[in-house]
Image (cartoon, rainbow, N blue to C red; front, side, top):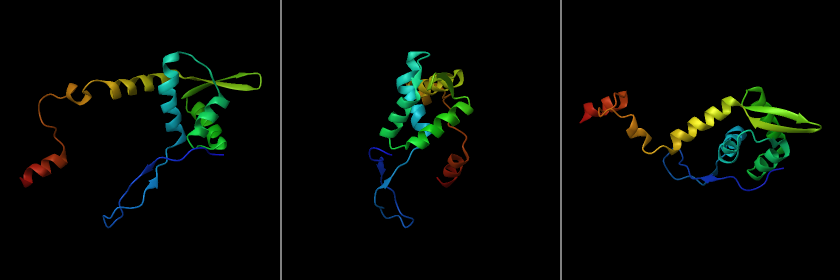
Length: 135
């Protein structure tokens, strides 16, 4: 069962004309990583129940089956740690995911991240070099 509408983006057809808006889809793992980074990362070793993740992903348009598969794959890949308490499964961020989310947050929210690494010289990219030759 899915809930909510998918985000919509406008595209262009091959002939350059505007196309009708098309739904934008996101992979459930990417959605879950966003939720983890935004709402779980700052709470240390917070254990989140499988049902909570399934409900949140359901609100984002992900089916229950896809949500369960995503959790299983993320555990297998070392992105989440799973703990069983009776019949209930709980998940925590693995050290690997914590490091990934911290590093991503630093890159995204750092002030002027591009300028911090710039040495004052123009980049030596082939596309820029080709453009320079035409001017």
